[in-house]
Amino acid sequence: MPLKKINIKKMIRPNCAGFEPYVAGRPVETIKRELGLKKVVKLASNENPLGPSKKAVEAIKRAASSVFYYPDSNSWKLKKALSVKYGIETSKIMLGAGSDELIELIAKLFFKPGDEIVVSDHAFIRYKMAGELMGSKVVSVPMKDFTHDLKAMAEAVNKKTKAVFIANPNNPTGTYNSTAEFESFMKKVSRFSPLVVMDEAYYEFASVNKDYPQTQKYLSRYPNLIILRTFSKVYALAGLRVGYGFAGGDIVDYIERIRPPFNISSVAQAAAEASLSDKTQVSRGIKLVEQGKKFICSELDKLGVPYINSAANFLLLDIAPLKGREAFQSLLKKGVIARAMDEYDMPDFIRVSVGLEPENRMFIKAFKALLGRKN
Image 1 (cartoon, rainbow, N blue to C red):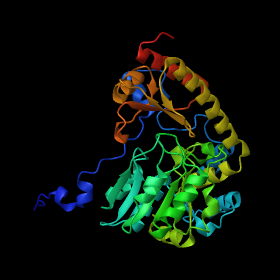
Image 2 (image 1 turned 135 degrees about the horizontal axis):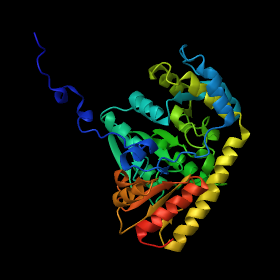
Image 3 (image 1 turned 90 degrees about the vertical axis):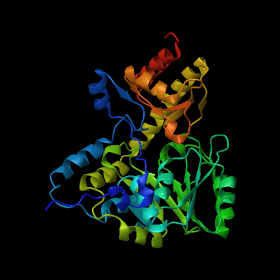
Image 4 (image 1 turned 45 degrees about the horizontal axis):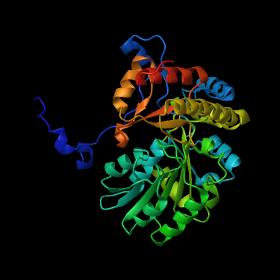
């Protein structure tokens, strides 16, 4: 007897009915195949074009022969390496398949209908998605000069607020909040003590600024503080998906209880651990970005195109009266993958990652053509 037809839409949780998926950057090989292009550069996902450390690559090769074993579910060696580097006990370190998984685990652990989470307009969209997925109310606070307005965000906190998400520096604007702003914010929200999630995916790039907060120093003072970082950016391990976080032992203990077992592959663990031992990986990445931004910004200045000063490895361009989607398609035809900002309610902007020198020059050439300028 055939099964009775079922209405899947009636079965799923209401929060998932109209849920929109995250829009990922387009792969290079897909664009080559679809548009018949021989050369394509990807400047859409804020990756490190220098690639991973040679030590990481060697570690991947060694780990490959043992992939028939399940990985260490506790990722002990990687946690130990992070502990040594940052001077933080392993009991306060958590790992996820990218910091995206950690954001979702935080939401699954803490958020419920009736709760509120506070985010900033134009902040990394995954915070909003995590709140909506769990049926919580997302309170979005306008930015000030394209930067998180921490004073206004603190004022939005109330007894229903379960968490505040702060991207520092923020994606896609590249702006950051200073140590003084962070300290003031933490004091202001102490009355309600919501979780304060500091997403520092671009930590290594922003740390060259003297007033950038070294938040790990505040963990013992604020048990509601959660810090998220990643191996996807300066360490160039985006394809292996390794994120990590610091928090009080109680928070980490509960995260460990609900996370999927074996969520970090053995290959990813080995690569991440080896990356931490390469003292040149971070400095090379930072130097590349500083040089690349200097070149791109100088060219944009010549063109009279406004952009936002960025503490990360990308730039946000105001291309009005052009539209981001139109610019994206135009650049794509010339082999340059950038990122339109419609999902961030910034339809007149595009975001471009800093690439290698030839890639940056290819972007500028294609961008000039988009504007109708001669090279």
